[in-house]
Image (cartoon, rainbow, N blue to C red; front, side, top):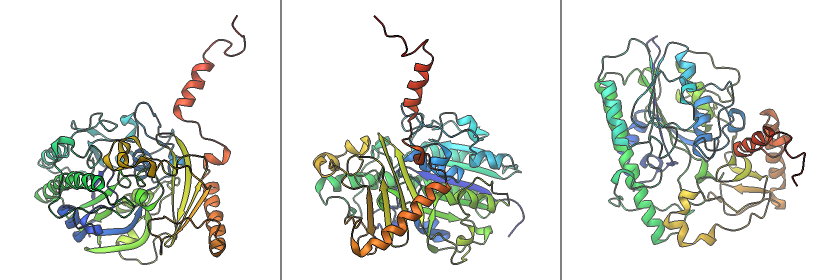
Length: 449
C-alpha cells in the first residue's frame, strides 16, 4: 500500500434500494455494478438513516442522523429543510486537508451548494433537486469522462457523482422498459400486471444508469486512477414503490453499498454480512485518507469490515422519518432479527409519496394503502416475517423483546438529543409563517374593527 492519500469517488443513485443483480435480482441488467461488487466488497445488510432522499444523502455526507444534521425532510423549494449551522459535508472536510473536490450530477442536501465545500461544480446537473438542473446519466458520464482525460492532478481528488436515475419517471431521457431477462416483482407488492409494467420500466432505468457507471469505471482505468481510488457506490434509500420509499420497513431503508479500493487492502469479491448504516461511510472515507474524524460524527468507520476484521459491525441500526409529504414522525431500531418502529402521530398505515401515487401499481388499488394507522408501535420478527406483515406488538410471546427494543430506542433518542423529546417538530414552512407574523406591528394584539 502506498503512503499517498487515495482519490475518492462516490457514486449515488436515487430510489434503487438493493435492486441489483449482485443482490440477487437476476432480471436486472446491472453488469457494471455487479462487476464492481466482484472487484470490491458488497455490504449485504446496509441501511440508510431515512427512507427519503435529502435526509439520507445528508447522513451519507455528514456521518450524522437527520434529527442532528437538520435535514428532516426534502431540501428543495416548497419544503426547504436545511443543514443546521456548523454541519460539515465530506467535500469541505477533505478540501481542508488538501483534496481537490468536484461535484457531478445533482445534489439534494442543501439549497446553498457553496456551503458544502466543492471547489468545482461541473455544468451538467449540479442543481439541488429532482427536475432542477438534473440531467440524464449519459450527459453526466460524458462530463466525468472528459474530466478524467485531463492530466492527473498532483493532489488527491474527491469526486462525487449523483445520478438522477432510477428516480421516477422511469422513462426519463427516453429510456425503454427492460424485460429481456424477465421481470421480478418484490413480494411486498401486489403481483399484478400494473406492478409488472412498473418494474419493467424500473429495470430499464437501472440498466441505463448502470451503463453510465460502467463508463465511469472504464474512465478510471484509462486514467490509471483505478488502483489508487476508493470507489464507493450507494443508493439513497429503497425503491419508489408503495410500502417501500417513505417507510421504515426494510424495503424503504435497505440500500446497496459497495466499495472497491485495490491499494487499500480490501478483500475483492467478498460480502460483509454485519449490519451497517450510511452514517458509517464518512468516517470510512476520512480513515482511508488518514484524517481525523470530527467528534460530532455519529458513524463508525467501515474500513475494519472492509478489511475482513470480524465482529466490527453494528448490533443494531437506527432509522427515522419526520417529514416527507407531510409531518409523520417515526423512529426505529433494527437488529439482525427484529424491527421495532415507534409512530408518534396518527396517519395512514404507510405514506405513499406523490411520485409513487402517480404510478400504475398504486392507482390500481389505492385502498390497499389508504388505511388508518392502528398502533403506536410495530414489532416484526424478520426471521419468519421478512416483509413485515405481522405486527407482533402486544403479543405475550414477544413481550420481553418489545420492552428491550423500546428501551434501546428511547435511549438512542436521548443520547442523540432527538428534538422529538421536546415535542412536535415545526416544519420550515411553519417557522416561516411565525417569522412573518412576528414582523407585523402589534401582530394579533389589537382586533380590527
